[in-house]
Image 1 (cartoon, rainbow over the protein chains, first blue to last red):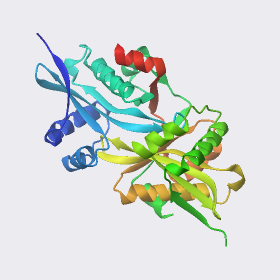
Image 2 (image 1 turned 135 degrees about the vertical axis):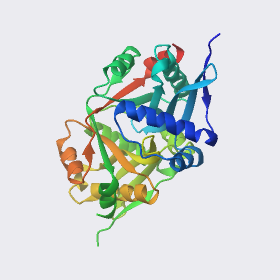
Image 3 (image 1 turned 60 degrees about the vertical axis):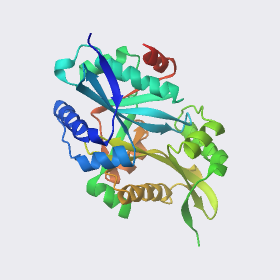
Length: 157
Length: 157
């Protein structure tokens, strides 16, 4: 019988996690600057985020990464889903939804009031999927980012 | 001589932090469900976010709350600025910018590659301020949220 399980990760999974991040970035037409040292430090030493691996019949076919955010208006932590990815050849089997359900359950069990994530505006398949799941699109909020030299300049200004 | 300092907080500051959160929510036309117990737990026991208070001549005039997020593509944590607020009667003195600089410096010192935040789309004064600071508006990312019953349904689906 086919089985799909979602398991936690350890530092030994860093190369696998990095390979999944690179696949997702290709799909999203984005660039990865992460390396194994970064993931080792921030995921497994500083523990700023949690990585999960999905295995279908014992083979790694997808991953998810989440971290805790915080909402001052609710006064509570929430879960922010940074990534969820299933290899193209394993899509259509409900694995992506299983990841989302698993992480929603973690949020509920820990008393988190929300689960949030972002999606690229051209990714209509995902947008439909999230909407069908009951997610609300928060269009009135604009995301700003300071990075690289601009961040250093702001710090020194 | 006038002095403005930014200080860290302890559990004794919970009532003050909550009063600031309520002021900010009024300004943003949003509703606060946070109470003191929530803030006590998530800020000072679970430590999912950090609150700072700004004092002008010894009087609390503003606050900021940030937490660590994580970018899989950079492999590094970043800082997410949940709130920054200065009481209306103390604006125009550069205190908001001092908060942003302080938190940008924390990001740089800790090796975080980014600082991010969101802003309501009608808040043009803030948008101009953030743009002048060098922040990039990430328009292609849409924010999704599951909350309340929808989150519980997703967990149980």
